[in-house]
Length: 312
Image (cartoon, rainbow, N blue to C red; front, top):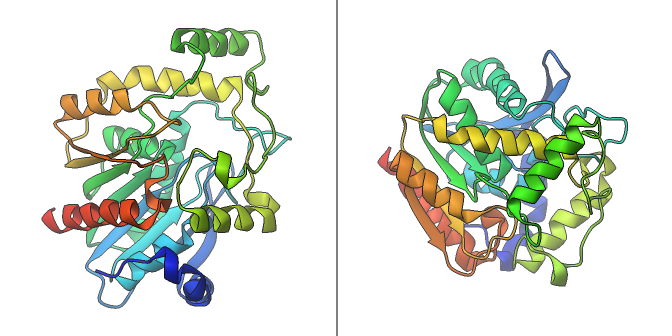
């Protein structure tokens, strides 16, 4: 397998950008609530399609390196910007506010993308690759919809939220009360519009070059930017998390857990892996964004992903 490396990333950018502009087909998909931005590319000898469900504040544009890399390895790739993310439709006048009416709305949109885009262009083996919030969306989709996925690889899945200094019961209660009081569309305490954080202070990745390129992309295209979460988003997410205990998925699952994650609560990943008999692996020294981490971590994750795909 070919692995993209930090050392060659800058020199490969022209090839990556050429792939993105020439091979990756990009368009908008109409749903009942708004338009979703998506992209796909299918190499000639592809035997497997990877469908990516990205995380909060993410866009398929952020995954240029990964999409190109998977394509080089002979995989068909499909990805969509979830509602409220990237180039897809946003709910509020202030587009920086992270908001969703019901968390299950994400998977309902995702199902439209699968039906109208993926299934129309691919009939072979399909594997779902999710990250963070996108993993939670993927799990919700798999538990509620008929599908043709052979397995799902979930990177740092958001099966619970890491609430840092705030006790979780307090965070849940605050989100519930604020939503009941009509403040669901207001920023949660401490949240604000998009503000890039210096690499030294970031909690997402220990790869300086990948972090730098991510921030440069978002600086160049304002429409990709997303700020903090609203009380409504938090309340919807906590309600969804509470429902996970009743959701079952009947295909093989691999849960990739980041040891130093301060975005999602890893405890919930272990609990769900036991309920589902899912395979779980913790990556030492890893921060939240396993697919954008430094090479030694990222390549270990992708190596396990490729093995998982081959075994299905």
